[in-house]
Amino acid sequence: MNGQSLLLQLLLLVLIVVPALDARSGITATPHGAICSLEEEKSTAAPEHEVEIQKNTTHFMNYRMLQDALYRIYAEVCWDRFVQQMANVSAMHWCEWSIISRPYTGLRYCLENRADELEYGFPNALAENYTVCSHRMYFLNCTLAHPLLLDPPENVLLTLIITPICLIPFLVTLVVLKSKDGEMQA
Image (cartoon, rainbow, N blue to C red):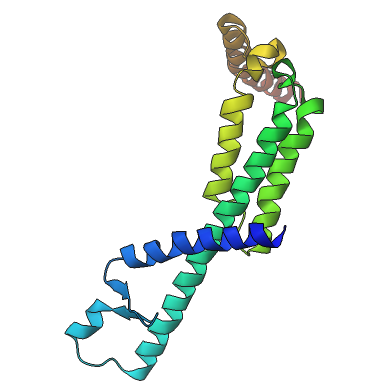
């Protein structure tokens, strides 16, 4: 990643995070960059340990928002790479695992590795959305392309379900009769 690209990503991150901080209910950014809660003004001064907890909570929330924004940027890069790779695959080969396994696995590994780098947690909602989107865009009709993967016809399915159900009472009856037969002979 070159310096100009990193600078643009940081600028984008600032543009995402600062409005999100201002939009939160009850918290505003002061001109000095400090974060203060409007709810504190109503009450008397909070004990020192509560102020420390509030500072830690605010820092954690800021860190989490930064993590979210960075992961969104990284996930978008992963998605763009996947789309470029899939553009090189003919639509008639989208359902052949040997051909699409490299881009599909690459998307998953990219999303997972970026989450690990940020200690973000995987799987997560954003990664799941990209995976679902890939299935909707590229692999939705794969079951139609491979008729072996379709459900069997209804009459075959019903036969496969009903046969064992009917066979169980017959086998139980047979076992009971055999056990009674064995008792009489003894």
